[in-house]
Length: 124
Image (cartoon, rainbow, N blue to C red; front, side, top):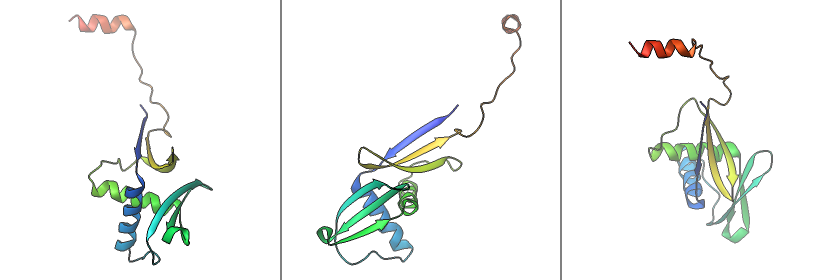
């Protein structure tokens, strides 16, 4: 069995997650008010925070935003499987954490006996 989950975040959640993560790591954002957020698919997902109405633009790497969103999920008690692959995508303009399980594992085949033997065993 393969499992796919998508968690879609609104812009406010993305910004709050990044700010919270940077605050905990003592890595401050540049001075100014965050007035917008944009995403682009450029060698992965790039996130752009517009500061002071676009006078400054802060570019965030995919890894930073992904880590911030995973931490946000953990803080909100949203279960994330440890051994699952977690990848950041942009779907319809929103940051989306795509979680896949068992996609890289081959299917397990279970050997079964003849169908008639199952019927005779269940009749006991």
